[in-house]
Amino acid sequence: MQQRASGLASPRSFEPRGARTKTFKPSRDLLLSVENIGSQILLAVGLTVAAALARVALGMVDHQFVPAAVYFPTIVAASLVGGWRAGALTLLLCFAANYGLFGSTLASHAARRPLNIVLYFVLASSAVAVCQWLGELVLSLQQSRERLALRNLNYDTLFGTISEGFAVCQAIRGPSGRLVDYTVVEMNPALRQMLGMAPEQPLGKMSDVPGDWSAWLTLCNRVLSTGMPAAFEANFAPGGRWHEIRISRLTPDTMAQVFIDITDRKTEQQRQAALFDELNHRVKNNLSIVSSVLAMQARTADPATAEALRKAVARVHSIADLHGSLYRSHRTEAVDVGLYLKELGGNLSKSLLREEDPVRIRVEAPAATMAVEHAVPLGLVVSELVTNAVKYAYPPGQAGEILVSLERRGATGLLIISDWGQGLPTSAADTDGGLGMSLVHSMVAQVGGELTIHRGPGARFEITLPEGALT
Image (cartoon, rainbow, N blue to C red; front, side, top):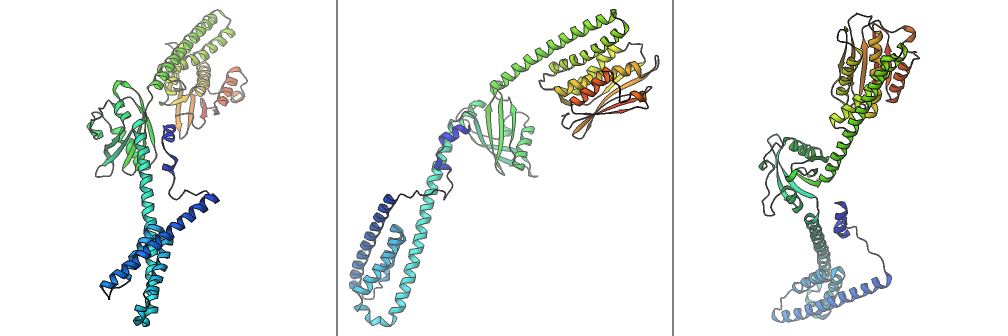
């Protein structure tokens, strides 16, 4: 849209008033100045001769005739037509003609002659100055009108030819001053076509269109109140086509709405999302196969190897659950971490606990989104710590609970894995050199978090998430 605007608009139409400068060209400018001065001299001489002849003719008719009645209109005419130079020259020529040709007839008024001369020059000079100002004002108004006409031409051309929809809307406010409706003042042909409106169909108000437009009006009210532009996507147009709508404030009570057809882009995004969902679904299935193979091998392995394989199965499950959450939520870059943790807790319960076991895994997590690159390491951390808690927190046969909770803390978040069992050995609270705790420390560092371990009562692992991890 910007490229078309720059192509249609003349640079002159966007040139600020008074910004134009003349390039000095010695020979051409000198010639024009001589021609202008010559024209001004001819104008001044011609008008003075005509005024003198009129003075003679009128003086014959009326001996009490006042010469100023002829000379002052002549000076004004010269100033308006030829500028201040022609006016000043006419002023001098009229003075010379009056006191030179008719000096003998003014001898009887010799006592008042000095005062008359002073008044003549003061009044005539004032008339020249006023006429010069009026001439500049008229010229400025004429130039402004030409610029406005050119701007309007550019606007009309752009308004009628751009492919984007464009509308100008007038606000209708309620008693409280809040926007309750608006009238469409202008709408270009492209927007009429987008909305399925006939060219002759009259414009109306937003409330004339059936539907719930409260969210739209709230957004428009915010734009008019703050002056900050806003944009959103919608597919209300006929045929289910998608449009990006950009709203900008023109005045406190008027706004512009630009409609850009993004159907092709949305179609491509949906196609890519479908492919991504399919990819995540296949990854989850493949990881499930891997975990099943590892579980089968654990049944026939020696106890130490079987334990390591079961931990590997839990880790693979945590990653598979993440991919399952991605394709079920149709997301590509972020996952609902609350849902993910609950699914992970359920799968850990199935794989680590039997129905008759008195230990339970509980997950408390609000709905929140988290980037995939953060969710994968945290899933592994939860899987590792919950697996350790199931094995070591409670003695065999003792009832207990393992809690996984996610809390918002302002711009950050806090992930807690806790139990109320036997607690951690003092020597191993922070220095466990096993693969499990090494993995936990590595994953927490990968997401930029901070791990705090509380030894008792029970065991409590607090992971402070970096700012912006939860949205």
